Length: 204
Image (tube, rainbow, N blue to C red; front, side, top):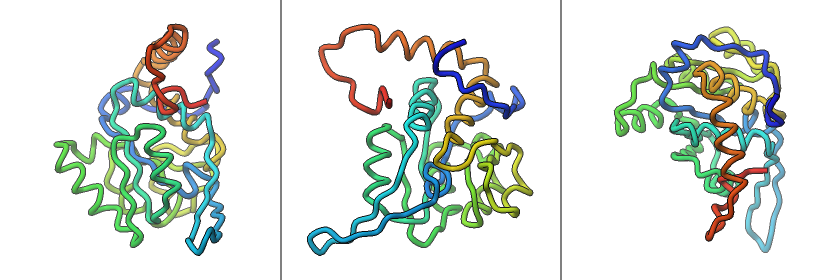
């Protein structure tokens, strides 16, 4: 068994998994545990969040497999911008009014991707509109009842504690790509590079 394997219990229909072209993630309660640390530094508002390193590597493997990744959140935070840049997430949309449906609709129109070709991982009411539309609505283990009711996949792990990694592995396994991507990742760490590929390529 690969040392990267977390053995998820979540199972995705292979035909559905292969149809997915873009994977979107909420932030608070999905990429994080939902806790927000607010502070002040030299008179400037500072917002800090806690991210899971294995979640990050899961997103790296999705990108490596050729899937487009997006962060869509209803808060504006420099922390999110930094994390998205670090993981080289393709699209990072931060709308403080939590208007996620029009934001994602505009992105999909620009990319020529259908709603049925999208997976989205959410946890609460701001995600409900998006989850109702996408082909693969996914929720974390501690999601609210309303979003759990419409999810095609409920993960066994909670937000900020491995849920994103569980989903990334389940999706790649359903597509028959997990082992290939793991070996490709490991191989890329075993050769010397003239240029450091950066943290986004080897989160963890």
